[in-house]
Structures are given as structure tokens and as C-alpha cells.
Amino acid sequence: MTDAAGTPTPETPASEAPAPLLQVRGLRKTYRDRVVLDDVDLDVSAGDVVCLIGASGSGKSTLLRCLNLLEQVDDGTIHLEGAEITDPHVDARAVKARIGTVFQAYNLFPHLSVIDNVTLAPRRVHGIAKKDAEAQARDLLARFGLADKADAHPDQLSGGQQQRVALVRALATRPTLLLLDEITAALDPQLVGDVLRAVRELAAQGTTMVLATHEMDFAREVATKVCFLEAGRVLEQGPPSQIFTAPREDRTREFLARVLERG
Ligand SMILES: Nc1ncnc2c1ncn2[C@@H]1O[C@H](COP(=O)(O)OP(=O)(O)OP(=O)(O)O)[C@@H](O)[C@H]1O
Image (cartoon, rainbow, N blue to C red; front, side, top):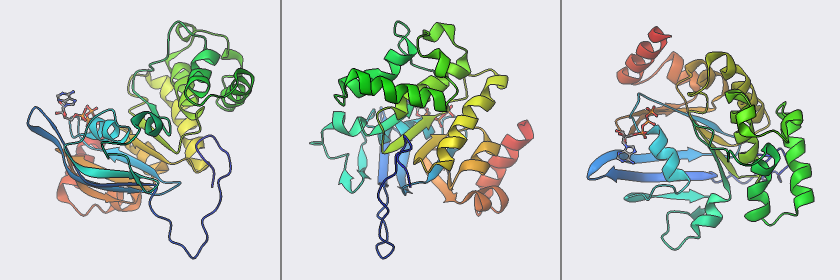
């Protein structure tokens, strides 16, 4: 098993069943009295790739935003590596430093070069020396086919390249968990493949990820678990073989038929 940056992590002894890396119980989130997440339970084990699927507005992004504490939950708990991160006394900054997030829009700092974008958090948040942070950043950039872009600025890159830089930036802090929110949604179709390839590589390396996606073929291919959300509830979750081939719920089947018909 490796962490998100590809560094080997100690194996759990076979006799001990590993606790889920992330455990969500009874999560509820409202916006001005409107319930957008209701009684959500989710377990994510180390090395899992959990794909959140569901119609627009079903709550996928909100769930990701609750997981990295960008949103305050109304009820329920989230545990990361056994510690409750929804505890009001938790050091939210320290928690966020262990969770890498990439959003739909690239969110790179436009005035900084690629290498400065990638090394900012390792240096500022984790106190890593500039030389070491840059060496690690260059390694990561090379892994994602961006070795020659270190000194470029975001506006000199294609959307797909920017999104791969955003992935590298999220990985540079060696997060325990990577959250990806529709990271190909804003890309031209011909650039989607490059970004999905990068995510596929991370999945193959055992990176633990929770990702919201409308790319069903991709979810079917990379997910260890698929979670179908409908109106803020997890209606069904299971391995892709269950969800895509033999869903238990009629509404999962109807959603997939609708999406796949649209192509
Ligand atoms: N900041 C906010 N204030 C009020 N309502 C919000 C806010 N953010 C999201 N919502 C509402 O919460 C619901 C869930 O939205 P969310 O963005 O989580 O859905 P989603 O499944 O990610 O949709 P999409 O696939 O379109 O990204 C929607 O009805 C949305 O309008």
C-alpha cells in the first residue's frame, strides 16, 4: 500500500481488520432549513476509490465539502483515521492539511508559476524546506507528464494540464485522502482523457480517493465502491459490478438508464 504521493505505508497485520480510514455516520446537512444531505453513512478503507454518482443536485459536492470541513454539518459524525474530525474542538487546519482536494475549476493561483503553486502548501503548511519541496514537486510533475511546465504560469497551460497541476498540488502534501469533485467537468472533451489517465494511475497505486463524477464508464472502471445519491440520501452503495450490472434499487437502474442513454 502507498500513500497518495506513492510513498510506501506500513502494512496492517493480517490478523487485525483495519478500521475504515474514513467513517461517516448519520451525516445531515441543511442550507437554510433545506435538507441537502440526510442520514448519510459511508465507509472508506485505505486504497478504496469511492465514486459518488447521482443526478445534479443530489448532494455529491456537498458531501465532499463536508468531508474536508469546508461545510459545517448539522448532525452526524466523520472520523478520519479513528479521530472525529466533526468534533467542534478539532484543529480544522490540521485536518484539512491531511486531505487533498481538487475541484472542477482549477483554482490554481494565476500569479504563481506551476512549481510555486505546487510547493506553496508543503512549505507554508508543512514547513518543508524550499529545496526539498521543489525536488518532490518536480518528481510529481514528471510523473504526470508536466516536467517541462514547472516554470510556466497557469494561463500558459491547457485546461487538462492545469487540472493535472491541481492534482499534483493536492498530492504534494502527501494527503491521507484525496477528494476529487467533478474534475473533468469543465474540460474540453479531448482533454478529459489525460486527466482520467492521471486518476487511473493514482488508483492503481492504491491512493485512497472519494470522487464525484458524471463519467459512468470511468466510475465503473476505477471504483472499488460506487455510491448512488438521490436527493441527499445514499440510496444504494456497492461494488461497480453490483451498481452498474445488477442494481438493487429501481431508482438506481432508472438513473443509470437515463445517463447512459444521454451518452
Ligand atoms: N451554498 C449553498 N447554499 C444553498 N444551497 C446549496 C449550496 N450548495 C449547494 N446547495 C444545494 O444543495 C443541493 C446539493 O448540491 P450539490 O452541489 O451538492 O449537488 P451535486 O450532486 O454535486 O450536483 P452537480 O452534479 O450538479 O455538481 C442542491 O440543491 C444545491 O442547490
